[in-house]
Image (cartoon, rainbow, N blue to C red; front, side, top):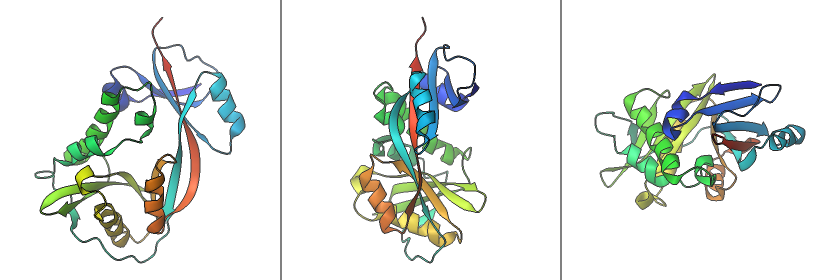
Length: 221
């Protein structure tokens, strides 16, 4: 079995979290949380994971925008670690449809901690290849973290404070990234996030691929 522990997630959960890429051999008896991703078209592989005890917690969708001119991005600037620590609080408040929030067996405080610490890693400079923040009324209202993958820029994390949603802050962040980067941009979300998918489609993104996200929680005997 192709399996590896995710040390970062293990720290947030307080117990081991393993990523499983193959069910060929080995066992899943060690206490902890197991995670896997299966392409939506690979139903036979999905069935094998389900027979091993995994459950589908959501279906993820990756959207892609090919290089094309775009205007906008007012109020957006690069993240400043010395004054933008508030983005961790924004991340803690803004997410409700991540795969961890959607899994009923993951405590809410763990799901929130994951997003908070994920954003904090951008402030600390320990994750990603850059980040943007957007201001409204003189206050940081949202942020966008970027990871480079070859000639693609991936929106690794994006969030807007609940009080600022509906005022164009998220669109400004995405527009700024797409105007700064001359190549394709990708972003992932969940099919449950219908509002988010429509948001990206209005900005020129199209669905590139989908996959099932699966979890298995094993408790100590």
